[in-house]
Length: 402
Image 1 (cartoon, rainbow, N blue to C red):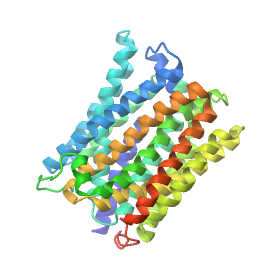
Image 2: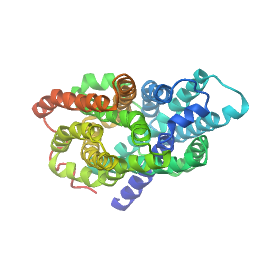
Image 3: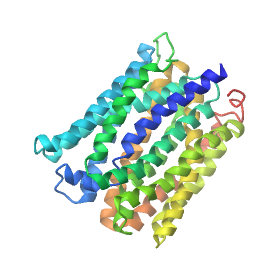
């Protein structure tokens, strides 16, 4: 049983990895990509809307995917279908400029459709990890390390692909998701079989389990900084320090590598000590580390600060996701994880929009100060509530199973 669970955990983590890899391939040279797709505005403005279109779709469509899989009592067909549609969306974006001369508004609409498809594969593969028996911290640690590895390898690989051509990352992202669509049906589906989910939206789950608002709040602010780095961080390293897309990808990997490699061990730690300490300690330091990236004056110092941000992010994320699993009823995990992903996607959107507007109006250091300060402020508001209501992890209660 333990060996089977470990294989399932590894297989599902691979699915999560593939989805994130495809997504992050586009980030290191997003300014050159939007120019190739017909954007006529400045790189920061067009890049902001290109990323925003995908994550706006994530917000809208995470719940329908989760509710449909809960109602059907199956996840695998939805993950496979989502991956196939997402792969087709990436492919259409890549071939569109060669076929017609689309307006950038049409490109953004197609980008939104691609995001609406892709979010199903991501959210439901994370839900399948929630469905596994055993340690929630280990399961979410596996998901977290897959997210981190997807971003850690996607950033430098995407940078290298941009050196070949501005549309090449789109073709590769499409291929990754299409391969995933073929492979996913081989997975074991452990979704609840009765198909009688009592909650059709995350708001229903929040009414029954108000404490879900805690991981949702932390998911929001953590992804806010991720959205900020995907746009403002990328252009910061490219414009302020003059890095190429390849070098920018390697610099982003300085954050993503420790973020990936430490997720699983920190997930195990959260099983042992509970969820409260990793979330509280991580949040207390994370905002300051984000501010540090924008405050230093040399590229080497900024790169070192990126490593610190990655370590602290790895401390928080698996504990936060495991807390969702701790609190959600088994037949509501699809919509519970959808709610977490909605909170995260709204945060990602806020990071892109707020960071982009602030950087454009006031400069990069002010933008880093603003976003890092928001992390600290939201943590300060939510941490006292977290300490008062307790810890979903139970200080080792879930650590006894592999």
